[in-house]
Image 1 (cartoon, rainbow, N blue to C red):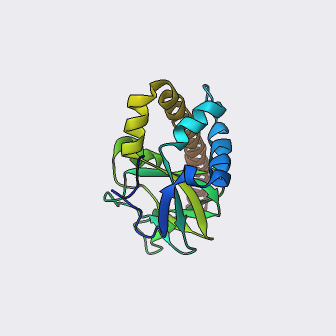
Image 2: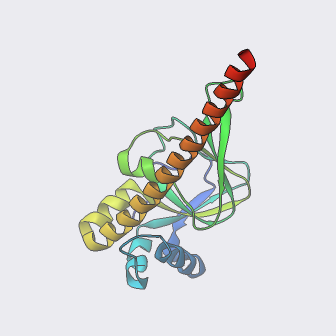
Image 3: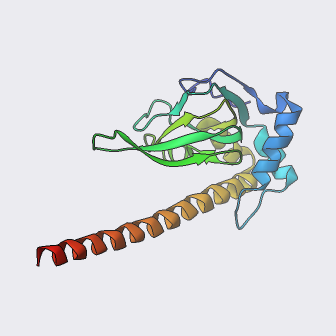
Length: 191
């Protein structure tokens, strides 16, 4: 059974096999089947993935991931219950910029799981958090032992990343339009 013990999140209160708690296993399977993908996980596929996941608990105020952290970049979290604030580091005096608050069904940390790069955002527990974790080692075993299921899971994660990139592109266009309007207003004031 895969374990997050090799790279536990710094503030995790405990981890255990998600299948050890039938209620949480059922909730996790339901959320896994809800991942938007062109190839969906069915109930049997979700049960397969569950065998590689761990229950992870964080108290309110805990930092789940920290921007730039590479020591704990080997897993993702599927939020089962609670809310997590996602913040990006900022070079300015504000220190960090809030990006979103994520709740049940949200996947956090998939980019670092997939590419091994340091964390790109800081995630902090707004409430107590109950999550299902998937470690890189668990994903590797899933790929080896159940490649078709792993392909479906990875397709779902890739689709979520693509949706976030498209959304970010739309936000950047909006910021560009605001920037252009402000420059035009400043030019009019200077004239």
